[in-house]
Image 1: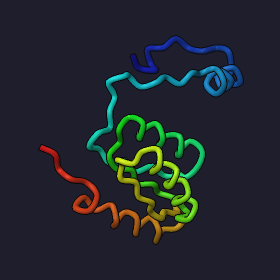
Image 2: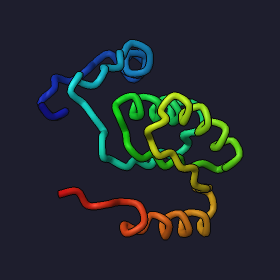
Image 3: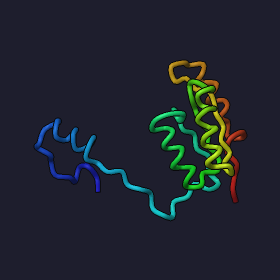
Length: 121
């Protein structure tokens, strides 16, 4: 279903905002979901939603997590906790400051497919 096929909501912006923000329930992924043999980059993964996302994906057997953070020291602190809970996962902390063009360029260079991803047959 596309949003164009939904009936119009005449309750006003405030009501839609309240529903979307406070009444929406997150759905758990299906039981068969797995991230085995996958690499994921999560920005801001040393705290808040990024950290929670990392935890969930590692719980779903993520093989390789790259934590993209502004502070490598804070990232390593969060990674330490994740490594204890998921000793079989490869967890790396990479510097990424989205406000710095040089940082973004360096991060992109580091994401070279030959370095990060491997092919699976």
